[in-house]
Length: 262
Ligand SMILES: Nc1ncnc2c1ncn2[C@@H]1O[C@H](COP(=O)(O)OP(=O)(O)OP(=O)(O)O)[C@@H](O)[C@H]1O
Ligand SMILES: [Mg+2]
Image (cartoon, rainbow, N blue to C red):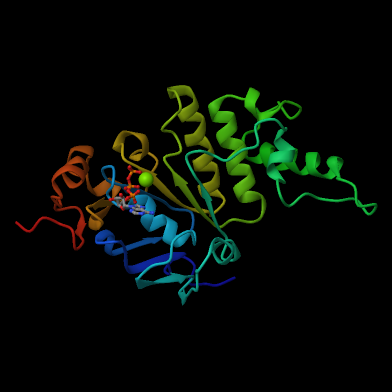
């Protein structure tokens, strides 16, 4: 294992830009993420959060900038490249197959087969129980189709699928936007569990209340640019709201190119 693990970011996105037509969706944005860390990416609708993260997940190709993984320049031109670096994304829609059970969802498109070439349901269910047991020990509904599960349970199935194949970098785009308070708490627990396993998590939200308590750091975007980033202990929610709404960078934060000049 690399002894530089703690001083070298897991992900370092530097000076990333992308335009669609004439619109600078992301403009000279830099963010980084360490192992076992939760970084919240905040900003209004249209700020460029999803676009920035889609560049990391290989869904979009950047016009400019560099991505470093474990300190080395990474080539991420498509989602397959990103998965090769252990980068997994959970989109708001979750993309689950509603009519089949948890194990089938975990192995969707990469099913385990027996030596006779038939589906190895026993092995898949055993692995599903192992992964879900680690994430959400109270989960017992292995025989139910996922459409019968609660929102929080569905979210845990989506997370289990993402980490089943050794994700080290997890991107969650608005993970709790559609959930009630109890289920939001359940997802928070899942995130803390992943963090304790050393997974680095980018948590995207346009609502600071969703993510502030979970995040080690925040990075705020506005009009495609980074307003600034800060440790959550060094700023309060009102100051972060000022970053989101006004682009005003408080003393506890490090300003980015999008910070309002005073
Ligand atoms: N595929 C695309 N084609 C054209 N414009 C796009 C595309 N994707 C994003 N944009 C534009 O880029 C800008 C940033 O959008 P993005 O979806 O990244 O914002 P966001 O911060 O994720 O917002 P939200 O909180 O609403 O999810 C917006 O102006 C959006 O219209
Ligand atoms: Mg978005």
